[in-house]
Amino acid sequence: MRAFEKPKNAGKTIRRLLGYLQDRILALILVVVLMFIGSAGMLAGSYFIKPIINDYILPGDMPGLVHALMVLGGIYLISIAAMYFQNRIMMQIAQRTVNTLRRELFTKMQGLPLRYFDTKSHGELMSRFTNDIDNIQTTLEQSLIQLISSMVGFIGSVVMMIILSPTLFLVTFVLIAVIVYITQNLAKRSSKNFAAQQKNLGYLNGYIEEMVDGLKVVKVFTYEKEAIAEFRKRNEEYRKAATDANFYAGIVMPIVGNLNNIAYAAVALFGGILTVMGRFDVGSLAAFLQYSRQVGMPIQMMTNQLNTILSGLAGAERVFDVMDQQPELDEGKITLVGMVKKEDGTLVPTTNGAHPTHWSWKMPSSNGHPEYVELKGDVRFHNVDFSYEPDKPVLKDISLFAKPGQKIAFVGSTGAGKTTITNLVNRFYDVDEGQITYDGIDVKQIRKDDLRISLGMVLQDTHLFSGTVMENIRYGRLDATDEECIQAAKLTSAHSFIKHLPEGYNTYLTGDGANLSQGQRQLLAIARAAVADPPVMILDEATSSIDTRTERLIEKGMDALMKDRTVFVIAHRLSTVRNSNAIIVLENGEIIERGDHDSLLEEKGRYYQLYTGQYQLS
Image (cartoon, rainbow, N blue to C red; front, side, top):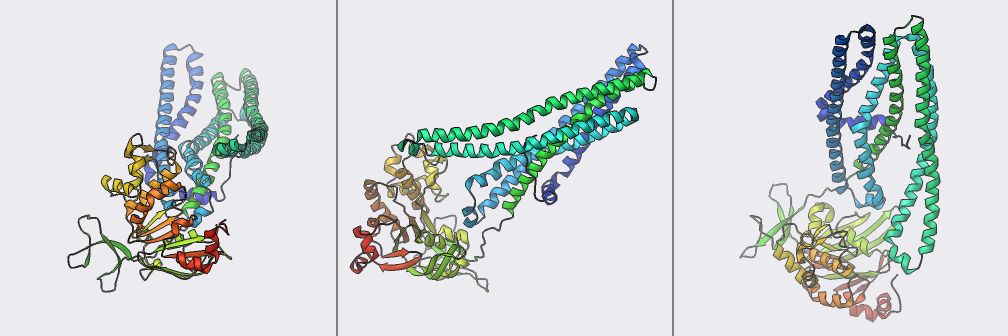
């Protein structure tokens, strides 16, 4: 009687789900066999009442009755055992299937482009792993086999009732039709109201989550009374919807139960009359009454299980929709190879797992002998245009260069395109027009994983994983030793606060590092980039969450980190870009000024206005 959602293409989805069950076909056949044994046992047990009464109870044959009861007990035990193993095996099949689905879904998401995630909320994507997968599991684990079992039980009961008494079955059929009609009407009303209940529950939960997350803001602006009033309003809307939904759902069972009792009484009355008239024997009447009691339950179960199955198929469609998304294209053939310098100055690939001191691009050739081009960090944009959405350009005809070892800074208003430039370097997105080269190689020719290994990033919004401080630093390079991680922390001045944590580098972080300050989290992110030891660094507001004193502490470490590397810096604090080799001022996706700090001040343009406070970044 709950709300359900119909799939758009049930047949296609069923065929695709069956594909995940092909490897378990023998187990499924066994489940079906056990299901038929269990259903047949219950039907046979009900029919066995007839000979027990006619052949043993009425004649007074006590030994025969004991023997018959033992046989009946054996039938029921076999039926119960079949149902037990049927459910046990089906549960294992369902768990293995959803495990495979969940694994494939997660793997698929790792390969999707960022454009896909830009259009989907985190909650929507998480619901694929929770609600949708759970619905599929319930469908496979319980609903599907119960639906088939209910159909077999219903058909079997009807057949046995017709065999016992066609005349009495007509009376039962009319009463069942009335019960089905009333049940379906109540179900429609209940389903409609449950849909409204779920909708209002979503609004209520969303509001609660928003208020809890923003509790500090609520208290700062003394918004408590308004928040409580809004909560009461939404809570009342949910109460009304839930009351209507549960009212109809609540009266279904009593109505159906009483109708079943009336039907049972009517069948008993007519059957009794037929028995008194000599047209029906007592044993057959008892067995018929047992079937009439059983026949109503499968109808209700089929309705409920069908709703659950439809919800599971709708969930499977949403899961498959994610799986059918086009993955991030990667046509690159050029790979990154770790190198070491020999005594004569030549570079050769590393061996025996040694940590490289240099890097080179490995370029395939037609003669089978690859060509190696040393990675120096020369990054250039050639007339690049880019837009996240059609007809809404973000970058327009951008041309710039960063020579090996140079520090290039980008400044400009929010939305000017600063972060977009760095996203294009690592190919989170591909350019619409123009070209980006890396050491003279078009970045589209470089395999994405290798390209990104060569780039270290520190983002404004840091993200720490559940684990120790040491593990979070090592995330930058998984084969880094503890000593290398500690050295990276010292380099970026993170070591000073880490050693004062309760367990030092073994302190466990949860909730995205909620037990650390924002500045400390940022320092760990910088240390993580340092241990990666990349040839090119991208610092997107890397010191935005660090106070002035901490910023001065890490300036020396940051300078050491950026030494001999090509560095792209995005910063609102202009003091952090003064020593850049080139400062590029962006506005509305276009470069309006470029030069070093002194030359831009002499021009007295937009950078001069920003630096002197005559113009504020927004």
